Length: 37
Image (cartoon, rainbow, N blue to C red; front, side, top):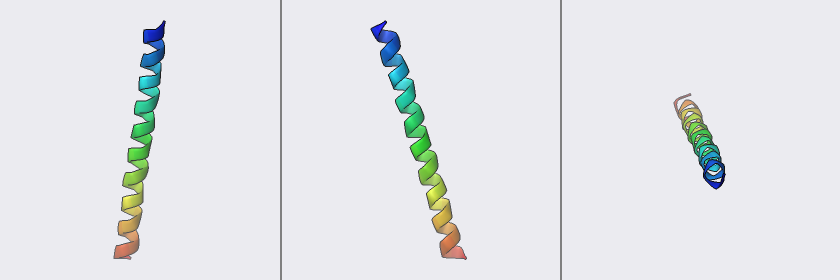
């Protein structure tokens, strides 16, 4: 039971990290558009 719970938390935190990474990439692309525009 504890293993399943910690596994779920691990997956959730991994998804969080992925979302943060996507946001960072999107932000960098937006900055590039502002610089080049």
